[in-house]
Amino acid sequence: MNQKKEILLIDDEKNIHYSFRRTFNQSNFNFTSSYDGQDGMDKLSSQVWDLVIMDIRMPKIDGLTLLKKAKEINPKLVIIIVTAHGTTETAIEAMKLGAYDYLIKPFNTEELKELVLKGIEDSSRMHENVALPDEEKQIPEHGDVLIGKSSKMQEVYKTIGQIAEKDVNVLISGESGTGKELVARAIYSHSKRKNAPFLAINCAAIPENLLESELFGHEKGSFTGAIYQHLGKFEKSDNGSLFLDEIGDMNQALQAKLLRVLQTGEFERVGGNRVLKTDVRIIAATNKILQDEVSKHNFREDLFYRLNVITIHLPPLRERKEDIPILAEFFIQRYCKKYDRDIKSLSDDALNKLMAYHYPGNIRELENIINRGVVVGNSDLLTEDDIEPTSSPTQSLDDLKSDFHELMDRVFEKILEVPHETRDGIFPIIEEILIKKALEKEKGNQVRASNLLGISRNTLRNRIERYNL
View 1 (cartoon, rainbow, N blue to C red):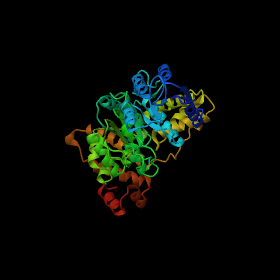
View 2 (view 1 turned 135 degrees about the horizontal axis):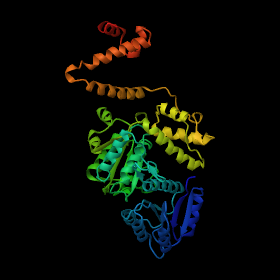
View 3 (view 1 turned 90 degrees about the vertical axis):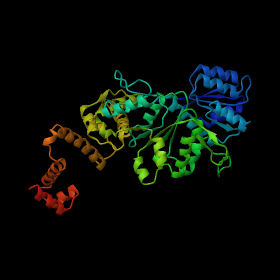
View 4 (view 1 turned 30 degrees about the vertical axis):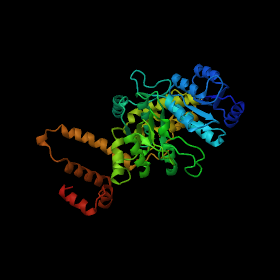
């Protein structure tokens, strides 16, 4: 079962506590109340909190002093300030001291809900560190871990270890579902900024007209619906790390503004004219080939080079199938714990079925398959019948290209074993074999063989004569 989120509310107004409990009457939150700064300090020290909400003006210890002390206890603690006495000075001071955000009383209920849920999500990202694999113990009991023993994943781990503590921007490439955010969090977990914020934003999931505000914030009244000042991710993650997922989907106007931040550390909120400074490490990710996007003039070349200081490529699951068994076992453990099931492992037939599948959705799809299997399975092993791929097992063109690349790697290894002076050209050899095989598969039908090869019938005839087939 998912553990409840622990939220501490420190405010001397009892009606505020009532309002919060009424707004968040969900079973997945535990609210603890404190009515003055000293009691709040005692409770802050007594346990780990997922989120803290506090007033500024309180008896015994004021909110800004308490905020400073709380950050000394836990630099990653997400603290939202709520106050009826909001001024520019107190807001700036609160942010300097490490507040996540602030709200002015009376606050909008929907805005409060959105801010609390975002704070909880970002708190989870900061506190759930991602471990690199340990040869002695591949799967830890707690937290997330990058999983896999394949040579391609070993290269990923090596790169993370080399660059995590070096304060450089990182670009993570790979298809959707390959685990790019896990890599970003692993870099953060092992970096010098690990005690500062780690925030994430999906550039493809937020409408263009809202993405600028989410990144850079906005001033009150800067556009319709901007009834409060809003702090963007760059302010909230100051001195920490910001993960920009699917950055290839960012429009060019925002790319220009992002480039300025990377070059100077400066930006303005939407509708503002005051220059703000930030010190943030950027970890970006994309499922697009950004070099191609640059060639198409969809992505700024200067921004690409700013981001592309270090590149980590995550291979699709079909290129690291030797990792499927250990990934499957990890997900079985995860979902058995979640659903209180007692499934030991996979049957041989189930594993064979998983190994034969091509995973267009990558690790995320494998996780979904195992999740379903744990729910429907009725024995201590997941069987072939419990394993239901989410799409057709028919191989895609991308899969074919990937398999062909692996095949050609083996061909070239064999060729390099032949002394250089005795080698013939490789292309005619491969071409002759391909044409011969196509004719065999199509039982000598030249029309179908030429279609299979993607060449004209006349070209096929010429090659048949050339190779005397």
